[in-house]
Length: 365
Image (cartoon, rainbow, N blue to C red; front, side):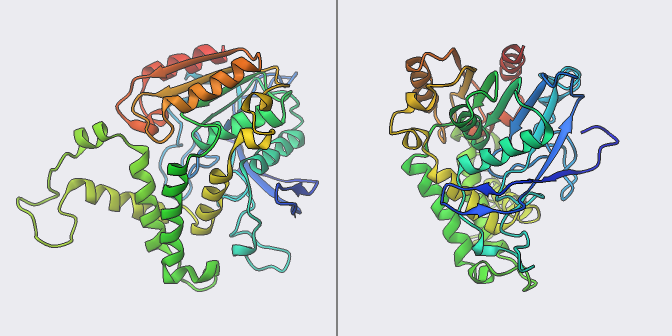
């Protein structure tokens, strides 16, 4: 974000129509921008965030003070070079960092809570397209995303085929598998089993379902890592002790790590948003949206595509990316594909993988 640019948000001028038939009136989209927009507005890149991400892609997070989640990728002279490109990153509808979501006020002044409509990935993308309209950007140089962000990038190509010249989808899928849905359901049940969840109406109680949200985060975080990475980082090493306690404290380093990840997450994310966004991901099936044929989803696109997977990602393994590549080939769309080697599992797209930097920089040109 430019140093003199305040936190940015737009109230959409038109109702946002959702897949479930409902509409969101006066929906707010919070976003950040980095780099200057050229006079012809032809250098804009939209970056879509993952499940627990937000618009703070290359700026300090206001709740934690930590660097932006893709600061290593976005900035002057970096693979997504803000000396060349105008980068936009928006918080998705349903989230909790300024865009309209369950914690936002409804028309009666009270938080939506579980009155918030169930949303889909396509609804999120409709919100992003409406943001671009409001910003006067008709055509993107590229839309980029990893994980759930990659779902949004593919959905934009399918549902707004003239919107982007390039589509870069990293560590993602065209539909959620039964295993993916199962892991999300464990997390949702942990949240809803927390007494403080209170049917979703916890905003005015002074308590939040932090215990349930922490467990949900712990379970999900395991899926973002690889066995190799966990073994190398933690193995069976004990945490701050020389012998097992023969109790249920965090004897092992990996237990302590997961507990820390869970507790840290509760300070920056809303439990109801976690429910809604995971449900949106579970509903995602790009082929189903287009008559059951994935190639049909891309029939009208003119974009160039690049898909990237990682050899240790078991959440969205390489086979998922290949499935999308085959559909793009069938649709006659230009596509390149690479599987990169990295020890970090699904989270590899967020970490130091020099080969990823080279592919991203080369594809964006």
